Amino acid sequence: MVSKIDLHVLLDGVEIKQHISLSDYSIEHVSAINDEMDTLNVTVKDGDSLGIKGWQDLVIKNGTDTMFGGYTLTRGKKPSANKTKNDYPIGASDYAAYLDKVYVQVQFSNQTDKQMLASIFSGTDELAAYDGSAFVTAIRTFPTATFNLWTVKAVISWLATQAGAYWYVDALLLSQDLGHPYKWRDRMVLGHSERDTEPTMELDYLSSCQ
Image 1 (tube, rainbow, N blue to C red):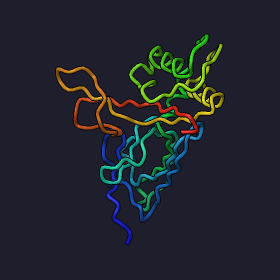
Image 2: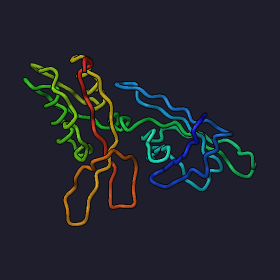
Image 3: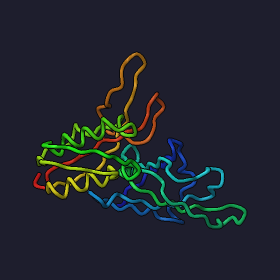
């Protein structure tokens, strides 16, 4: 027996599942690691009022289980069944896509891959709120490494290739309770909630032997 899907689709934290019809358009989701990011294709029906554009936060859930979290990267447009409206095919990639937008110019001597990644994440304004160390395993020490205007994604991929590691990005929500400092929630969630929050992500970098 096929279980019923409790579909939720959030665009920048706003529920738009009323614009998704699985009987008309399927949702295509491909999971991957390393350079091959998770990808998702979904078509939004009658989406003229939504203002769909690139680099919006897109989350797909089945009930409370998050199936995908990432950014919209491509957007098409075609007439809907109602010719006065339009449908929007969207192509999205997981949150690792953001790492392709951030460039670094750094040099290291006698540091592990974990030390270098921690330094890059904490020392880069665009990544300072992201966790680039807690789930990173030190696998190899590099006598020297120079990255001259490399994207952070390219740096991670190069280090992983040299160390025989694999990596992926987990999306988390950094929450702030009133009167308390920012802290990691004890469960994984994607996108936004009703609380005073901001989205962030966590880098997982592990030995391929684990």
